[in-house]
Image 1 (spheres, helix red, strand yellow):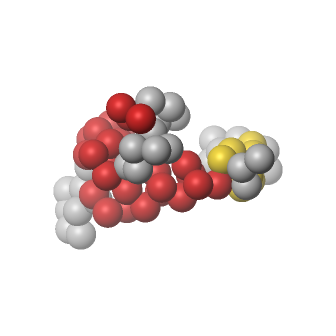
Image 2 (spheres, rainbow, N blue to C red; image 1 turned 30 degrees about the vertical axis):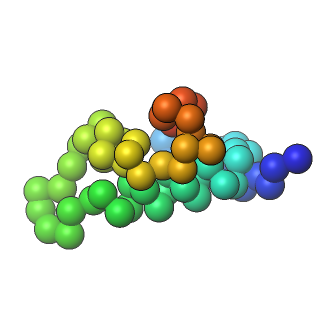
Length: 68
């Protein structure tokens, strides 16, 4: 059984969902690694697309299940 982590949707304060901790952490780390240090930044789609190549293949084979 995989470890879970509670995440809160900023659009619905106070409402949480339990997600796979390893996948959440891998996606968070990949997105943060792709974000530019200075303006103008990136859109959410650009950040996600850039992060796909950094995701562990064992957790996201072929980018599968990397959608939000």
